[in-house]
Image 1: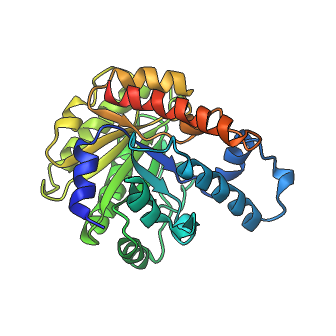
Image 2: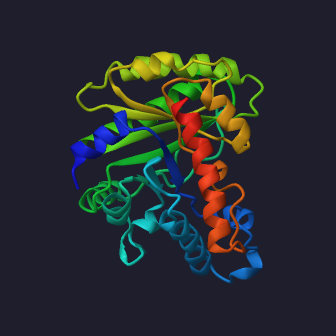
Length: 295
């Protein structure tokens, strides 16, 4: 796979990134929204088989086309096929979609108003395996719930330390310090977060840029400085619990920021739909997110 072509597609392509990286904790909820109750599977293995079938149905759909720039995969997906082909290869070779890998192992308990990432054992080996399979970048998520400067600094220090390890492995990190949309001081958190991001981005070589995945801001255009920063390849937004309609509306008011939606992308999809119904619903979802991303 051509890293140069993939970088150019992310940097200047028109579209958005699909987040298909539901993990162990979020999978039961994702399946329930898709119309599959917990009673339909008796083990974790069966659960992951079902969610893989859902992901394969999404990426195989004719609606999953050039409007989708990239897709974030769960680690287990990396070792499973899409339509008989290695998942990352299928995305790039068959769909022109740049593959990313979620590498975090979930969140620690809240402290200082934030949730740091859990340790990631075997990370060097995972990054090497991902690189060998043609993965372009990674994604790693923390959560900020209160405007605690010490907590926010801890999140950013951990994120950028990990980002440097990812860059050293020849991959592009998506740094994701999510701000809880229900936080009472969300706007104040965003001010502190942007300040800390800019300070740390100034230490990143512009020849090896990172990506940012952020909660949609309270003030429209608040991320303009981040979008324009020379060490940022792309700023993408998470839906963060907003409905697709609300997330799209907010996204459209933030020029230069594109979507990286998960639940908002799959909203309205059901295992019970016929292929025609499913493809129509997915096409409508993708088109609305695409339009908001290029607005």
